[in-house]
Amino acid sequence: MFGQLIVNGIGTGLIVALPALALTLTFGILRFPNFAIGAMLTFSAYMAWTFNVLVGVPLIVSALLTILLFPLVAILCDAAVFRPLRDRGSITLLVASMGLSFVLENICRLFFGNAARNFDIPLARPHRLFDLRFTNEFLIAAAVSLSAMLIVYLILRWSALGRAMRAVADNPNLAAARGIDSGRVIKATWALSGALIAASGVLVGMDRAIDPQLGWNYIIVCFAAAILGGLGSPVGAVVGALMLGLIGELSTLVVPTNYRVGVAFAMIGVVLLLKPNGLFGTREIVK
Amino acid sequence: MKPKSILTAEAIRSGYGGDDIVNGVGFEVGAGEVFAIIGPNGSGKSTLIKTLAGIVPIRRGALSLFGGDVTALKAPQRIAAGMAYVPQEFNVFRNMTIAENLTLSTEFLGLRGQGARRERERVLEMFPDVAERQHLLAGNLSGGQRQMLAFACALISSPEVLLLDEPSAGLSPKLVTEIFDKMKAVNEMGTTVIVVEQNVAAILPYSDRAMVLVNGAVRHLSAASELAAEGDLHALFLGES
View 1 (cartoon, rainbow over the protein chains, first blue to last red):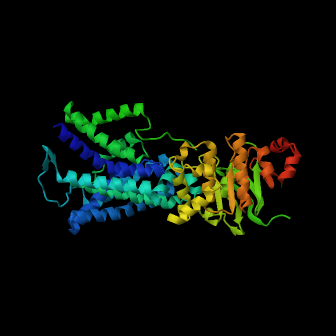
View 2: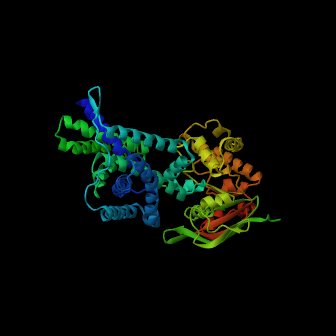
View 3: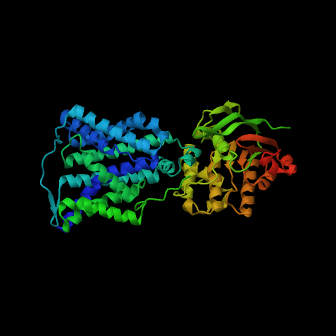
């Protein structure tokens, strides 16, 4: 029982980790919390569903196409909504992201209606190992999430683009003084975030039915994970998501299942009381 | 004989929000000069040098470098045109190592591998203190070492014009002398230096010409030696001359 709860918690955490990572990446560079992350996740899930069910290509190909194409949607959203408002401050951008959220959600509703949709994937029995059940969805989510996190880590730590992203996140004026083109970095950040959101859209779509309000189920946990880890910290977002997943599942040992989200949020409250900037967050220095 | 002009500012206005901080400043800087910009707190010195660097946009007026108009260029393009800028504080990426800070500058030039290493070694010859600790986080360096690293990063692009914003801020008198000696050494290798400085007594001996800025406007511009001889700089700063 305990082991299975750990497995389930890790599964939930890994799925939430990707959009939380995307949220923290855009926050680190653009300094606003992107409320549209839930609607973007929904949009990408519909994109994958379109390739998979309407076009009829296998889910893995649909997922790859979505991961390749959705970053363009994210860059387009930035160009249309956020770029014109870049100098207006984080509250304006947050409100704009709320507007974008409604637009994306209603585009999905316009084209696909309100009916729930499912990917065309065969039902499969869970695999058993040491008395623990591992569903195919869990194994795929684990493989995709861990690979995505590794790729993001390698990009941020070792590539020229990653260094430029870290530099712009740390000090945009100094980055400009060193010749870093912030416009290029912002596009790359949206592309990377878009790919992460797309991957999570597919994983979420495998886990539950796709409907226009799919993303709403993930906005709060996604924000909670990013804030718990420390907004702007990629490692923090992943750790925050895993902690949320694990605490939520393990709490069912002592409280009814309905309260697990409440327990997870109470734990976040305690952590933030002790560390107001989150587990891996750094104190903002006003320059 | 006055050296050939390398940078010309014509009636520049710039600032933040709705207000102009720099109010129609004009001057020329000759090739190979050390040009000091001095003035009291709040006179607009830092805003002016940020404007020259392309960090703060020019609202009115014009800026030319080697006779070419760079008014509309942003900071990265001005670096490509031959400028480099060292900010007053927060002048290194504290969460990155010394090596990563330098690598960012070589990457801007499109250098990788051997070429990048050669450039880093060329610049670090001038800064042995920094060269020995390349794996350290820049945030763990002392104020003087951070300033040296910031200098080194700026020099990687072999700039024609180096813009320095209060390089002596927060440093001990010994370190101030060391920093200004480095600045002079860079200048003697052919780089024109424009330096904003609060420490007037320290900077004038290193400068060829100096400009006094008061309330965002030019109050006085002359040879540094003449300004040093004036004696009553206080009156100039307070606008009493």
